[in-house]
Length: 337
Image (cartoon, rainbow, N blue to C red):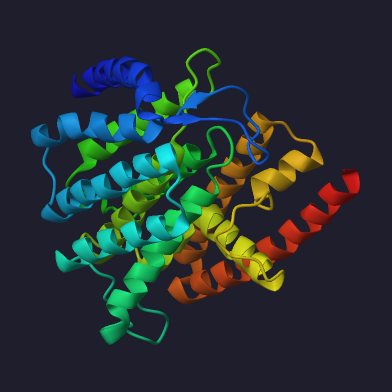
């Protein structure tokens, strides 16, 4: 019953926020980097967050999940401010850093990165806080980076959170996720956003507030499941976010080699490259999300057949494969244009 009600509340929130978006300057206007037409409300992240907020009191959740959710409001609110008046990358990074410290202060932190072959659990020790901050900020920005076309960021979020649930199901640990009903409401909300995101008349975007919030939440949900609930091995965390992590690593490496600011936006992400080759937006989204699903479950298959060590090695190899292929595809796109 709650799941059906969540659809209704989402639609009511949409009507309310859609009409208020221009008043708060939450409108995305086309420019040289953006491929959309017309002015689009930047309310997707707000809708997803508020819809979950409505149902939070009615379902069981852990202390850590509550902290993650409420702290995410910092990125949502400051991100909306950034969407409205463009405060810049430094402001965004500071807000992400402060938000990370709040959650770390609550007791949630990456203490180990799992066991590998003959090695027992590898503790991070004094590096745990720094490592946690770098991982969360990196993945948060990875989701922000891929938010360059319809459905890609939200679709990647769904692939990641679905991978956690499927991995946990086949590992017989799904029952350890306390807030499972709330996770389903998040999934419903993101799916409803995607429907609107692909519509013509009522089109909306996530905005930086939405993409950063989704990236931040999935980062900590992965840590929660690997550290506290232990539903998945830490190495599987990497495979749950294969494409977003591959893309940000690849883009940063290429920008550094070109002596460019790694956080300065450009059109060298994999979705831009595929668009330049000639695929349409829906085709690019289907390709990337399909490859992401295949990679995630490829990692899970290796884990079950060969164990954590070879799974980690396969992930590292795939980073270089991804970098090589993205360079080749970029050269092909340049030749075609």
